[in-house]
Amino acid sequence: MYSLDDTIAAISTPVGEGGIGIVRLSGPEAHRILQDIFRRGRKRPGTNGLQPYRLAYGHIVDPENNQVLDEVLVAYMPAPWTYTRQDIVEINCHGGIVPLRRVLELCLRRGARLAGPGEFTLRAFLNGRIDLAQAEAVLDIVRAKTAASLRVAVDQLDGRLSQEIHQIRARMVDVLSWLEASVDFAEDEIPPRDIAPDLEETQKSLERLLSTADQGIVYRQGVRTAIVGRPNVGKSSLLNALLRTSRAIVTPIPGTTRDTLEETLNLQGIPLVLVDTAGITAQTKDVVEQLGIERSRAALAQADLALVVVDGSEPLTAADHDIATLLNNKPGLLVINKCDLPVVVDVDKFLPVLPRVYVSALTGEGLDTLESAIVETVFSGQVLASDALLVSNPRHKDALQRALDHLVAARQTQARGLPADFVAIDLTAAANALGEITGETLREDLLETIFSNFCIGK
Ligand SMILES: Nc1nc2c(ncn2[C@@H]2O[C@H](COP(=O)(O)OP(=O)(O)O)[C@@H](O)[C@H]2O)c(=O)[nH]1
Ligand SMILES: [Mg+2]
Image 1: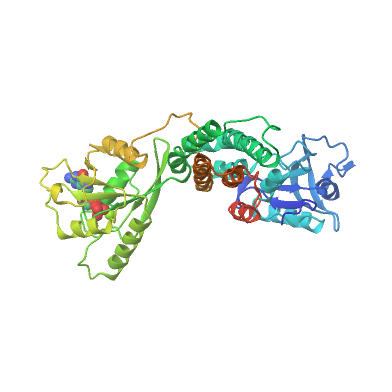
Image 2: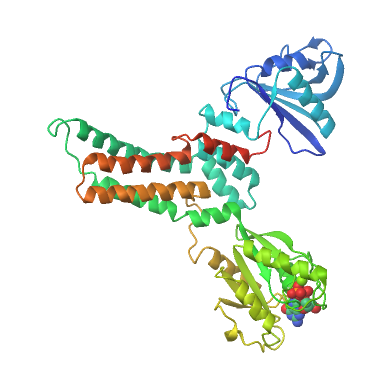
């Protein structure tokens, strides 16, 4: 898959009907293939007079039977100033499935190979235009759910994270080269150096980056939030109130919601994936409702956060307590709904103890407080400045954590006065872990997993 010598082709726009759709080619044969299939008006066959980086109008024609496949605009972008640093051709077709497929098939018949998932971006990485963290940012930009998620991803594509990682790693490598010299040469041959401050400051830098990861990951991945509670407490009403739409069906009849329902809410930049669930009760004989309850339990198990809704106008019931036991230490908020009515519920009896918020899904009272309470819980009370560099990818967090562990080990080894080669072993491991983030330390299996998440054509 990682050969750079063949020419790859793919439909780079989403499949479906649209104004335009783009077939993209990258590789040494891209221009020749374009020459085979492009007609620039009747008098000027082929790509004659085609200017690089300019759109040109014409038709895609099958040279075997002279059949016109589509009326197009094409751009020819010669290496190295392109996305992949190879020759790139983009063919802007009409955005229907059939014209795009036929143009793509023609490119394949003329010698291109269908691109694998993310292969254009992979080539950009392998040709050194972007590093691994930047390649991952491309996918994050495509998938960004809120302006805040987009900001974090654009920062990463810009290389802010990579630079920081690169600097920390360069300092480690610098210490390493001194350590290795001190093993190889006699004491009077190399200048003495106290590496303790280097190690200490490197540790601080790693810890600082790591401390941003939880917030960054929230912006990138969102927070799955299950709205749970017994029937008729107002779960669906709460979902609608938070979304400010009437997305879920609300009735006074218990058991209205039979299936889980998902909607994403932008909560101060956090993509909050709200999951409305069927009311959990022990007694129902209705098969459909019973299945719904199974799904509710599953939704709760998969959620990052639970909004446990109780009816403030009624005493707690056995079903409320059942739900409490399902929580299982999951972060949660106790939402006391219907506070427009006289509050009679005794929430002190609700265990575990959760932060409480009084709301009325009917009047909207308390919704602001609920939203702030959610942000507070998600970020454990500490929100970083909006321009802070955030680590947003769990893979990066994991690599940073391993780098930190090895670095701490290196410091301990050094503090115990063990020989330089022992310190060097730990420090090498730390530098390697860090290098995995940018791809400076290359692992083939990593490339597989990262790029398999991309769509074809990216
Ligand atoms: N007074 C009052 N009634 C509410 C409130 N929220 C929901 N309800 C009513 O409670 C009933 C059940 O609401 P629903 O959202 O379907 O509850 P669910 O079964 O938990 O999803 C409906 O008649 C709603 O109009 C509220 O805040 N105040
Ligand atoms: Mg409901």
